[in-house]
Length: 231
Image 1 (spheres, rainbow, N blue to C red):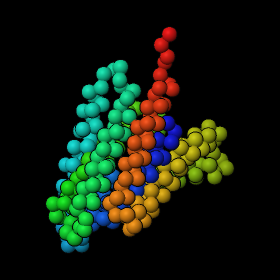
Image 2 (image 1 turned 90 degrees about the vertical axis):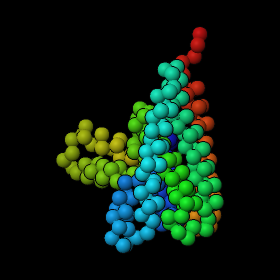
Image 3 (image 1 turned 135 degrees about the vertical axis):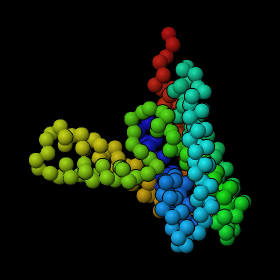
Image 4 (image 1 turned 120 degrees about the vertical axis):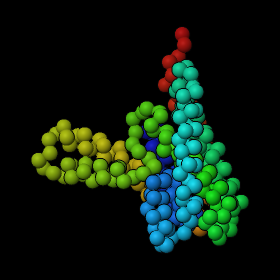
């Protein structure tokens, strides 16, 4: 589905921003960003070092779980892999929502409720990060935008340069068109995540959870539409 990466990018921006604001600077999607914050915390410039350390094994659990689920599918049901991962992530996102609501109000980043919420969120986003590496399909990265933005800038330079060859220009135009929706969706999701947290708290995570359920249904319809019909 062409819209799948756009929806997933919006989810990543939403969840990462919400967790960053609500859980003392915790990244759940861009999990390696926590290395910087751990370094700052060790030097006394931040809080929640233990919380940020705990999300790494949780993120690994999400990736390993995704791999085991996809590997367990028979060849006959391999097309259902994307749908399975969307469904699992949706369940985990509901769990992140309820764990966050249970933990509220969060006054200490290293309290058990805060760590439980952060770890469930990291498992959910571990599933999303593993998804494009396990399910081979055309698409763009949807959890971290640094590479997409870099490539979009390079493509824009090629498009604006008068000496660019026609073939290079066509490839740049196609790449730019495929990446921009994800970049815009991620940025929009980030703003929506922060605003939703302000007014709804962790209940705001019901939005990405329901969006994932929508992807489950859309993926199922797409698979039925493209599967070969029996004679």
